Image (cartoon, rainbow, N blue to C red):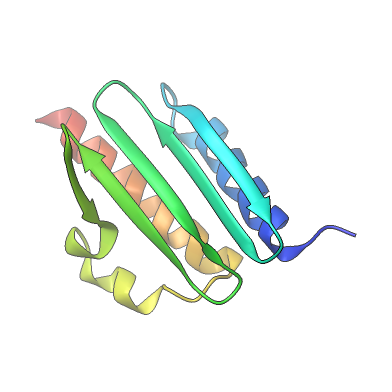
Length: 103
């Protein structure tokens, strides 16, 4: 039986592979209720981590780190760990990456 944290990691990996061309997964793991995935390109690094109760997305751009909700305050309502919130935060990360690439 696949555990919840394994499903969350799998969802993140699938999204990165499908939607974030040029990004590599640097680390992915899950243990019990905990999970973490780190992916990056040459300028941006993203770490999504948490447990089955809640998670956080940390974005590092050119050596400056901040939580994703500082980019989009809607993330404050997406902290409970579920596939819908993970996908929503990944879409925000995708938009952030696109806006950064356009600068």
